[in-house]
Length: 155
Image 1 (tube, rainbow, N blue to C red):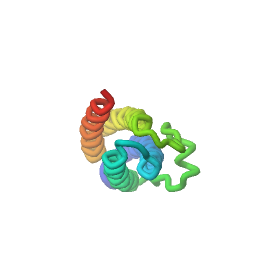
Image 2: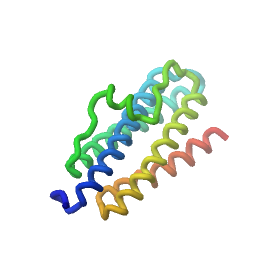
Image 3: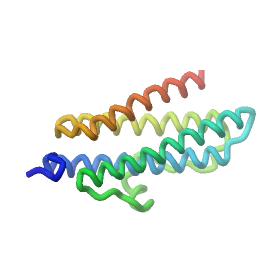
Image 4: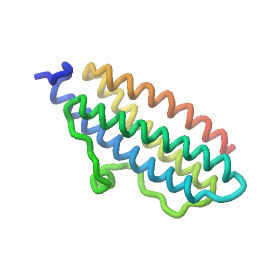
């Protein structure tokens, strides 16, 4: 049995569940980076304040795209922090003011995101879900480059 976009309903439900996990992870990532943006201190304040804003602006776009993809697959996106906290692999960060600590947190968060993106990419390919494959492929490419840059910053 297929849904309205021609994806097997069982596989679409599995994808929606995994995308909801990614949605929750991005919501926690967004809030972590937002907190870093607000609270960062030190010599790198100006550059990191702007960079963190770039990251959370990008995350909010992805949050919307992921929720809309879940709806396209005929699923229901999670939409409460209660639900996000239950399923997110990314943990809340609080009170971080040091730039190096902030960058390390962002790297760790991106590692969680990219692993989930790769998992979803594989599942979407098996389901012949080109829309989700394309979305995850784009996210992975961007995340890989961002991780390279962040790791280079720390050296």
